[in-house]
Image (cartoon, rainbow, N blue to C red; front, top):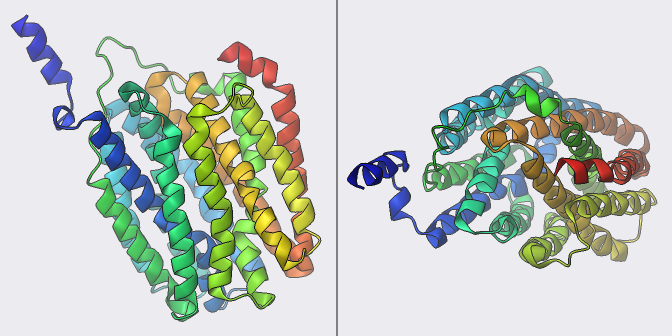
Length: 399
């Protein structure tokens, strides 16, 4: 008996015994909030900083797209090593600290070439954080009897405050100085990473499967392809909606509020995700997100009146939120448990590559056609819907 207790103590990660289930969920919620502070500032206002540095629409599209391709070479390696060493928390902390340094260096770059190179380096540091965090949460929360959605929603809450706060700052701070707001949010994210506890170790007798096993799973391929297409349909919105709205005369606060509207409804979806009716299966959530994307981008292409924008922004809860919940749920069920971070990294690669292509195309289209370019985003959303329909029997078989 003494030997068994000693063995269990050896397997427990440092600090695991000190953290209750509630404390673990609280710390993870705080970290999601800190991480999404970065996204809440970066997504709407990094393109504004690029514009202030003298880049045109085509160059902005390329700058935003190229680093997404870099993750193909870096994220799988980092995630696989984190899986192999059971070091998800440590990898999140290192990447969070490195991203602060990299973005601070980017703030001193000038010229399209130097900015692109600096952003590539910064993306190498930052892009692994989200797939590592998702793998960490989806691995640890079920072990503690906690649902993913109610913890993840705090990231969306902080995103709302970040976009509104950044909107206020955008009317005060010179556009060329917005990069330092991003650096400050990255520093908050790094502080939050120190609060995460190490993941529970895998059973020693459990054999780690080969990473290639995921890529041979047709259900997994269908999920990430559909998700990549649906999420890539946001490229025009993520990259150019702020510039489009500023050109229409909207102030920073108004733009921040518009960005936050969809996230508020997204928060409600995440909060209720554990209690949704049975009809909202993971596959159906993915399909709902795709259909909502077709509707949202079709209307956005018509340059709608201002009163319509809040309703279109509310669809973000479906185009992003429902798609995200369906995707991470299906990936978690399909992928072997020992390859959680690796599976999330492959998903991240597909999302990154599809977004890179869509963003690059969006830059050229926006430069030529303005808001009419939203019509092109209907194509990937519709393709994602088609895959979600035809892959349903496959997902039932694999899960």
